[in-house]
Length: 236
Image (cartoon, rainbow, N blue to C red; front, side):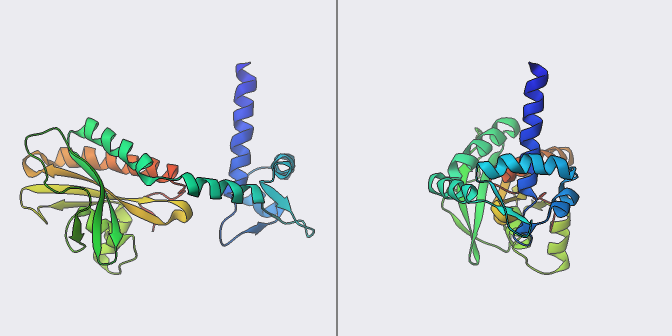
């Protein structure tokens, strides 16, 4: 039974891999193109495509090309109607605080400002004073730099941030605090916001920075995946 269950999971993952082969730029694909993008044999693709077509996830046109089916449109509409970003972000912030014992927050870009959309405070005597809804400039701070960099701001400074996939600020806004910011992406690999940790400078050692960058980057990648992204945080 265990073997059969594993085979069924593999088949589902292969079917989903076929669906993921379609992009905005490549909305209609030939059998050979799908094979090249997925690494699957054409016979495997045809077998799985038959099931996907019966359930409306994929269609085959008269010229033999494949395109996504209407079932995905219906599911997408259902997803949009029930989607609540807080349901995804707040548990992530809570977990980050549990692991790091530092304050975690999620920012979005709003014109020439950044908004603290969600925040979870660490249980410490020292607390960074910002609360949810706070509006800040985009010229200082870890999450500000991230939002600018991954919104396409030109320049070597932002190129470096895009290459690394994170930014560490040391007393940029407040001389007593440091911070780490990483990008979070969503459907279409578009920037959704920036995930950040705020740390008192005396605790923000090189070792702490290294550990927290690794944790924050991994967390952002997982959150991005749940929001529909297939992009690694360090990709431009």
